[in-house]
Image (cartoon, rainbow, N blue to C red; front, top):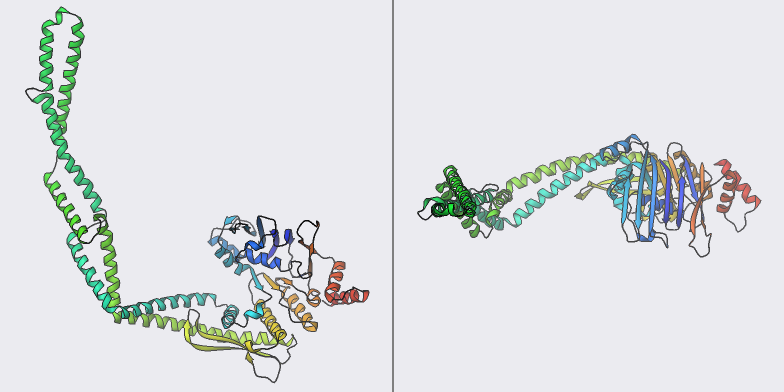
Length: 552
């Protein structure tokens, strides 16, 4: 259940902190005070589409948050998505800034709107004030029946089966339409595959052989450079070493005449040792280096094969391997498309699976429809529709789809002695509102969520029917949290808790804001009296209000 709601700068709400109790709670107030703003805030927290119009005038951001008690189902949902904070309380928060950017969190973790919508199905069931309008849509009627029958898992299965059937049918249709073109494509692909079979490219081979080829081609240069360097240093007649030796011999003849020559002589001696050592190092390097000329020729041929094939098919050499894999995959696809018999068999198998699931779904719908008919018909008797009857027609349609092969239509007879007619042909707006309410109460009585929210679903009714509605909501509140925005004193009088929402303006230069107050018994008398109407609240009105609260 919802334990608390915190709203900042939302529509006409400046700041609101609200703790919500268990049981049936009525939310009342004059038109324009902001009663339905609380519902709008909750719907935003549950992933509804945002709009900058929601931001309070003069503010840059709206900030909404709500806390919920955690049931085992909710805890499992949070655990599966690693959103559990280890507490016994779930916190949802959403912000909207003036630029239109919206952000959401579940237990402090950033979340998506899809996650909010998914989670909301475990938390609340909201019946809006225009629910009776959606009842007129055939698709909505099918959705309500499926919700009543709890067919969610079966719908997931049949939608998957429908996707597989649709995919198989599309492949077969495409294959028939493009049979000759696919044959030509396959022929071209086979030519390419034949060439690739001869080439036999492998993953990363081009890069590998290119690198090795480059290294071996430079190895020849290295070999020549080392041999030439060794000759220049020590092997040739006019080598550096022989020239140094000549210089040392000449200096040795005159070194005893001037001591300064000794330093030069020693430097040349050191240079001779360095050059001799470098020559030995080159010889050692050459003795340990094995340059395989046949391998180089092999790589050269392989690279040429790659380049020739790449040029033939207008590709880069490094693209050949991936193109080869892609061509094999395409060839398989075209071969499948070319095998019309196999494609027809796949369509047949997919249709058999879909038809079986559709038949099972239809069986559950027809069984659930009988139960739903009884419950709604029973509820209608208490809503000034004595003798009325509610029926659900579940018929096979010629246009199967992702939700099966059924067409669902709600039929209603407003009183005894008339034949049920399609709901869309019900003329009375009040009658439609009462039927909508009967469906809402029936739907809510089977709901597995902890919180039910009714947003002015009592529009179009009054008198004794309104009191009956209030008693129905109070009955629901005995085992669930029920929040009801209402303008009817008879409904509010049955509530266990009563909040008044009013518009206040503390400063004439500031925009007005909504304020919500939990009413005391005395304040409830005044609020019920106001709702009962009249320009002036009299003692007689107050007595009527007290009596209504006492009966409620």
